Image 1 (cartoon, rainbow, N blue to C red):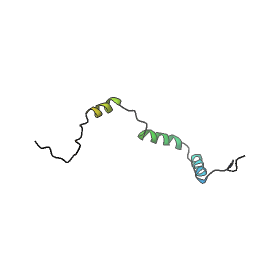
Image 2 (cartoon, rainbow, N blue to C red):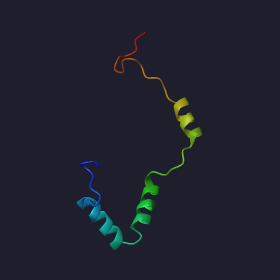
Image 3 (cartoon, rainbow, N blue to C red):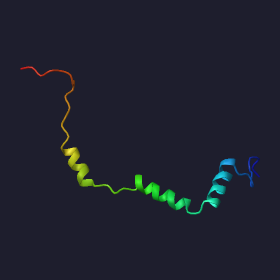
Image 4 (cartoon, one colour):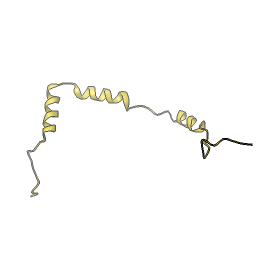
Length: 68
């Protein structure tokens, strides 16, 4: 048996989150909806390729004037 084994231990944060979930029905669904607003986006690979193709190469020293 491991000396660090704690079968019934739950941290204060875990207890708080479990209590909050029990008192607030539908919270996980609202969290998923909020996550979908910011992170779950489809990627337009054609647009990304067009942006990369349209990029102009930068000169090695930006502030150098071109002289003839």
